[in-house]
Image (cartoon, rainbow, N blue to C red; front, side, top):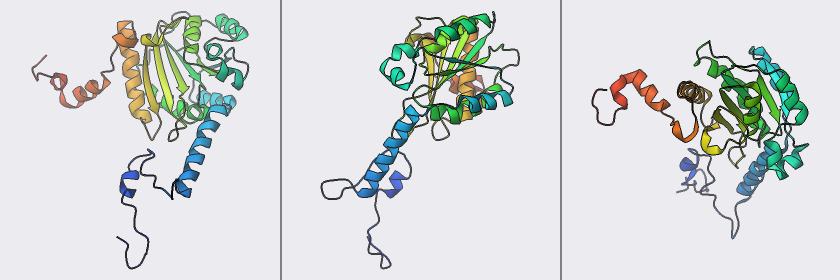
Length: 268
């Protein structure tokens, strides 16, 4: 009901909408949407388009990684520009020939992990979240893990990390990549892990962590999941459908003891 001070009736959906970024209870003005909702939709759509088409600032990203004492290398895919990248996804999965030759010359046999940061479909996600995620990751990993140089890849698709990891001879590749933007999440970062990376791997051989951003899966939680999957992948020698994410049980065991994860409640 309207109050004596205001003739406007409060929106009963306002409290629900404050709890989610989803576009619900938009209202209507005659046969159309209210002007403010039309403007919000246009803004969200523009943010999503900008996230796809904006170029990644590779210099700034490399400087931030170097400040965290990561060694960095740069590569690009076979896609010559953004238009070709969007039209030819297969080019985004293959390294440019000159870059492949250069990486082969820098090959480091026996490294455990190769991290690749790809712009993907949202350079905004990579620019915002890749560096703080890697900073959080380091606190969860043993110091003896051997890393290849962190590779910044432009015009990149997920499978590009397979070729990069193969050239470095890595046991495990970790791809941080900008996910396809949505109307409420133009900056969502995805993580893909592949054991024994090589060209021709398929998605069933990978593990994925998605929606990494403060409004989704925060850096600390994402880093914990990623570190757990990395350790288990290196220990078991696999990723994909054979490796289930049981990091939540690891948290419960840390807090409440090893029996908490058993469905029957019996001691192990």
